[in-house]
Image (cartoon, rainbow, N blue to C red; front, side):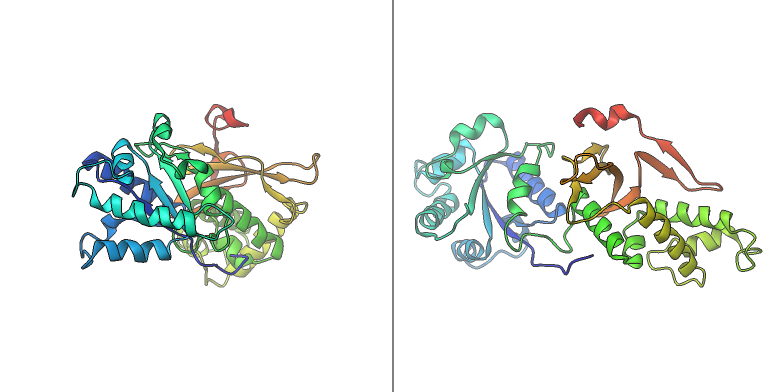
Amino acid sequence: MAEPPVPDVRVLISYSHDGDAHRKAVLNLANRLRQAGVDAWIDQFEEHAPPESWPDWMRRELDRADFVLVVVTEVYLERFNRESEAGVGSGVRWEGSLITAGLYHGRRDKARFLPVVLREEDRRLIPVPLNLTTSYVVGETGDGDLAPLLRVLKGSPGAVPSGLGSLPEDAARDWQVDLYLGNAGEVWKRLAHDLRLALAQDWILANSAHPEVDGQDQDTLARALAEESPRHALAQPLLEGRMSALREHYAAVNPASWGPAGDPRRIGADHALVVMTSSSDSGAPVRPLLMRREGREWFVANFRAAYVIPGWPPRQEEIPGSLWDGGA
């Protein structure tokens, strides 16, 4: 990456155990946040080796957390307000006391306790004083838009993640920073595997008469050159040639003023189109980057809205505009 990693933001999720479906929804929320690079934590991650005292665990986790997400439901509201029967929902009652104390005695410029709901209609359930700050709808089945919440979580000091995951727009920006700085190894490493393979194949075809290329098995050579950190003797001329072409194409891109022009346009589960342009020059060209998720991370899959298909020769398949330009 172009910049050294900084500590992850730690998020604790407070919720009531309304039933199996609700527990699964909260677990899904935690994992979605983690995939987006946020160190989200819930009690379900501890249940395989439960602590000696859950209240002590909660106090420690509240102290550790940069943010606390409070998942509000009707059951949570009753227990938070101590309206449930004695002994019922004691966990939320205890958490409610600690959260209320933290709200009234904290000394922070930004809200630390953020109310979230699974459904829009549940906003009315958010208790005082949690309803004094912005609330977020995260969806019941993993289809809610987390972007507004992530902007808050990742916009505070120390909130940029390392190692847990990334967002397509962050990965696109980091790739352009490395290109601008001339970090050839990082630029190549942050390309999706199929793109690296196609670029290697294209380079081999263009240099087939070269004495070090002629006579070699093309597939074996292409696989060697397409590695994240290729060690083949021909890797240096390949990287130099690709870096030269890319830097010429992106000559006008200055990371100080360039960035995503709006939210990424999602294409299926594993692709997103990030349109980059200048925030200071209204006449600047746009530079779309097709991003692909591989595991937890996002990689540059192409320099335009088209799927790359390796082969001899490699080819590209245009992505229909109807799949991605609706939000333009």
